[in-house]
Image 1 (cartoon, rainbow, N blue to C red):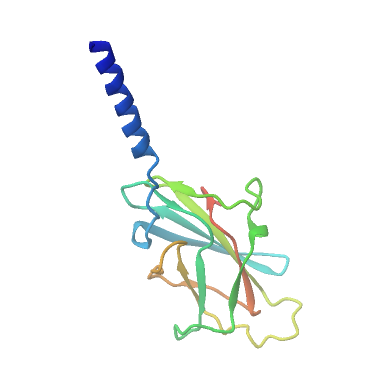
Image 2: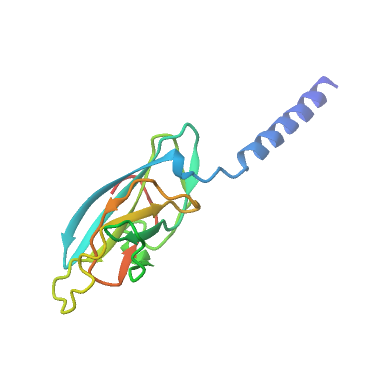
Length: 168
């Protein structure tokens, strides 16, 4: 009888542990993350801005997909003529074109890239200098980071990549 009770107890314990482990992790909230901007770097007529997100919270959380970027003019107003195109081709190898759900432990990083034209080889410079900053919102969040980031654009369409694990 004692062996049967032990086995039943073990099955219940394993079952309960499986239930706990299968619960989805929470999405990282803006307030749990810090963000820093690297760049811009310039290559082949494009400005490349890397952004690094760090889990500064005390729990594991997840991020996946594309952040939201909004261009702002020098007065902090939305520059409505500037759009951001989700660009999976910007994700560097070996990640290729696959969006992953990233599990960020406290202190872990994820990053993404935003690109824009530097204006070289363009005939119409009317948009150059209209954008001064970017407002960034992490994927799965409605709250943007309070900090604004320096940004320049000379075309209507910019590129934004999905989140990748680690550092650029």
